Length: 118
Figure 1 (cartoon, one colour):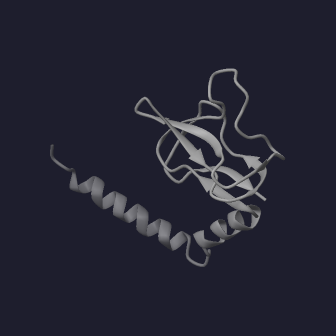
Figure 2: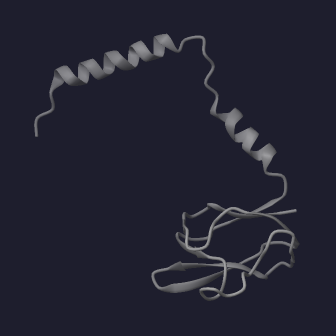
């Protein structure tokens, strides 16, 4: 596969033009993350692995957690299934469930926010 040098030169020129057009406009990605941290007041529990999140031990069963429910450190908040293995995700601290950030059966990534505790 041969790379067309004319295309690469056009891309470089387009990037240079974009830089010039953005001159004077402040692009600060730190502000976005700060705003997100301000919105999230409380303890965030994140997914320890990549997999599928389940809020109940079985289909149609009672959910491990509900908004407003008080939980203790070590309580199972949900199950993340990975490679046919059901991994119980424990709470890292005591608190009251403020927000559940995933839905039952939703794929989750490593480090993705699962719940927020007050």
